[in-house]
Length: 162
Image (tube, rainbow, N blue to C red; front, side, top):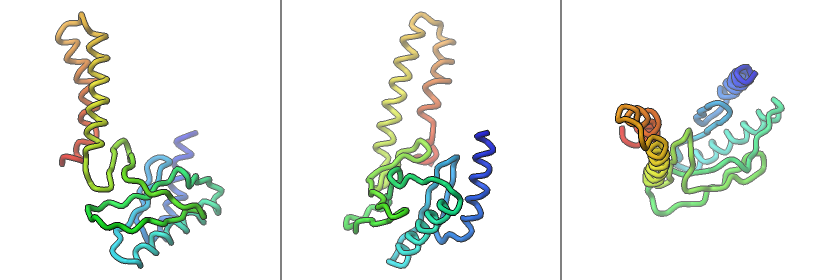
């Protein structure tokens, strides 16, 4: 049933995407709306896209939880105006970092949070593997390392080290 639900969701949302002025990316039930902001007109177009998303949700009896939404600006500029985007009448909170498809994205375009998170997770997996396979042979240890620890280290590597 979930596959059918995702298909219907994506099909219905794809029709809505045709009227959007901002780019949209959908993965499962998550949605990202983004736009390069150069001037106030771009800010207004992004807000208009958020308004259309809210209207679409009401028309299609879909529930959107605005409190789970986040606004983030990717820039290295020092002076920043606050982001004041609304979704269904609720202010979307501005954050300095967010997780998207398992990758931590920071507003200053630094990968420090992602690297620290990955190293910590890989160390936990490595220690777990070492505890379980204390007496195992080298082939078993190598196989466990390659199948448990390496995928953690390699996940999303093309994002932060192309």
